[in-house]
Image (tube, rainbow, N blue to C red; front, top):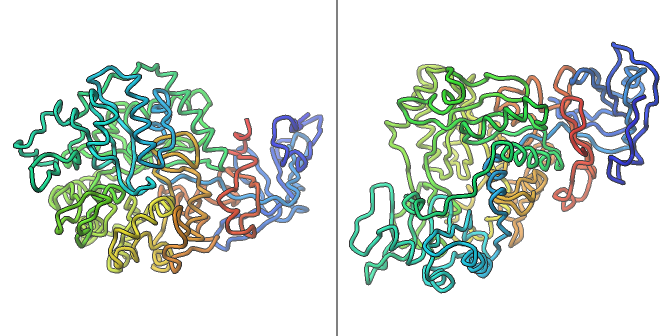
Length: 577
């Protein structure tokens, strides 16, 4: 007998389930049929069907309920959706899931919404960490604090006079006096070539702002509590289940190293992996693009190797900093601004690779058969990357390789044209627009503000746009750094509403169809998996989510509150457990 026990499901879904009580199975019939719903297929025509049938982990029929129910037989689990909306399983296009999962084993950082919150967090850590050891505030951005600034060196000194303190902005840090002293940063010392130490114009004293070179403070940090491999695996599995709760069935994991890869593989080996995973592998250098993936098992790996659950993706490098710390490489200067502590009127951000180095790395990736991607936020950084891509494209058609740009917050009209002509896929994080748009609107020039995440323009230019979060720290879908709730990103893409303000860039709104494509078929296309997932079509992997609301017709502001009442991966229910 195959019945869905009501105790396993939320109250809102219990009434929609029809238990199929049977006594025997028939091999050519479906394992599961979902019917009497709104099946948003996200196929080429964006077809809306009534029902879908699944057998052996794949879709075997999609269409009207009467026809699809003919695939039901003895042994088929039949679910009456009672009009509920079903979509393809959502795909997270860029996240650091392993890092977020394992960081939570050591400490779960509360949401930091103000300078007062940051100082209170530091004061609490003072009670827990011995004097002389580093207190690190992970991933605090001035654009997300109420005051639109970070604590000053003096404010950090006030709550932690005997501890070195570092407030991490990813590509820049604010440190206190004790940290400067222990790191040997003095009034006279010239900074290393990869580090910019801001100094008071009158006294020459370091202000506490350091761009790049944060590793100089790493030796001051206390050694974290050792965790076992199984703890890492369990934490990763738990976070992936949280992803399932918002309808995610696939992820593109950014910058995967050996430790993370082994954890994912262990979940897969033991049948506990509940999302499909595509590994973006950080390239070690221009001399050896394959450095990180060779470490996995001493074989030459390349893009596409793997199976339906774990697959090797693109090789990755970093080109500039980030817009949330004022280090993204822009075409024109930022101009003096308090939020990022920029005093040099000519400062355009940080460029982290020469054109010669980048071209050599891109060419090496091409020759080795790799797909390639790079972190490039500013428009000048994107152009820098596209210049390297263009050199290869002049000799060989780049389009079949689907090279990418990660983030691409700012793209010039000429950059859009080049992306289209070379078939370059752009990854974006709409939640950044939501979280940071209000602050950036008071920092950026009018020209750059118009270019900030121009989603509609990118679609109109014929560019494949993939959606993600860049999730780094935290377990909550909305309060994490960065929020991994895809419905928040989809809602922002549709409304262009920001967290502390109204609508920013209304002309760049997407339709609901376009926004859903970003998190389904476009992400599958980016990883060469659009032939097996990303839409509900016969022959594709049976990944789907039953939604708590009608995505296509609910009020706009209800989109961000949508959750998955049921998530199915390969024909198996992974949420609720």
